[in-house]
Amino acid sequence: MVQDLLIAVVAAAAVGALYLAAAARVVRQYERGVVLRLGRLRDEVRPPGFTMVLPGFDRLRKVNMQIVTMPVPAQDGITRDNVTVRVDAVIYFKVVDPASAVVEVEDYRFAVSQMAQTSLRSIIGKSDLDDLLSNREKLNQGLELMIDSPAVGWGVQIDRVEIKDVSLPETMKRSMARQAEADRERRARVINADAELQASKKLAEAASEMSTQPAALQLRLLQTVVAVAAEKNSTLVLPFPVELLRFLERAQQGPPPDAVRAPERGAPEVPAGPEPPGAGVPGPVASWPPAAADGADPGDADVPGPGATPQAAPTMQEAQLPADDAPETPPSAADGRPDASGPSASRPVADAEPYARH
Image 1 (cartoon, rainbow, N blue to C red):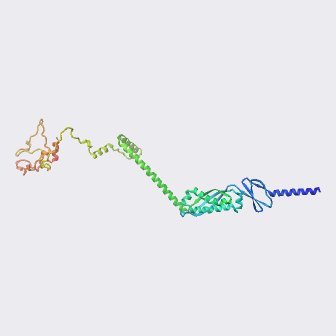
Image 2 (image 1 turned 180 degrees about the horizontal axis):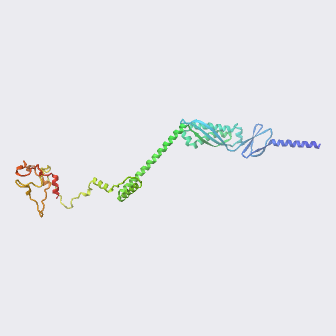
Image 3 (image 1 turned 90 degrees about the vertical axis):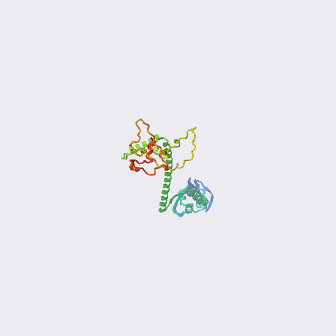
């Protein structure tokens, strides 16, 4: 009897141990347990730790609650400006409702992957190439909203979506490189033009300031000569005097207005009377020195002695004779007087001016 009782106890203990082994479950910290009893969802979700289920009646589904990183396969598409591109992305999501992730969708990972691919192709068709290259943050937000809307019903929360790379055709890459080079060259030319404009303004101010200071101008000239001489070349530099340029400039401009003297204060003004008849018509020019009288030797003309006062030469108006007093016929060569066409003929007015000045 005792032996049969011991066998029964041992058998019961073995069955209990097998039952415990079949019913015991361990849920990790980053997991949650969803129990289905006879195919029906149990209300409670098993927390992390040790839990028990009914073997043969309950089925425990463990759901990972960590953030999942899922790469989205590269998608080919045509942008809104008709450029063929190839875009790949990465998506970050996690399960927030384990029961919905088990019941509402067969495989939430595969569902999220397919939704991400279709949303990425849709974003490519609605965007321009410039947006894909420079405005990715806005595209990431739009792609996240497109995936998150259906994923909420699956108990999945989209944490972040990032576009990884945008691949372009080789022809498009070369075109963009030429465009970027042209843009950089344009900016460089604008910067050089602004620099030249500022330099020209400063140079004009310096030239205006140095023009008022002759010493500064001479110093600048000497500095230029020293700089040229220090280059070790065979060029001979002869500095040109700046004062000569100033003199020539003043000579071309003429005398200043102050050179013309105003009439003395208090001097009576002589009214201009009517011009005599024939005043504007030039008359014949008398010869100088005056010719000798008829029959006289030209050498017998009165010559002032050393102590005599020299006779003033006739002025231009005195040298002019009226047209009526001119001799009708020239004197004869037989009288001993020189002919008017000879070397002692009357000199022009230009020869008489030096005598008038003396």
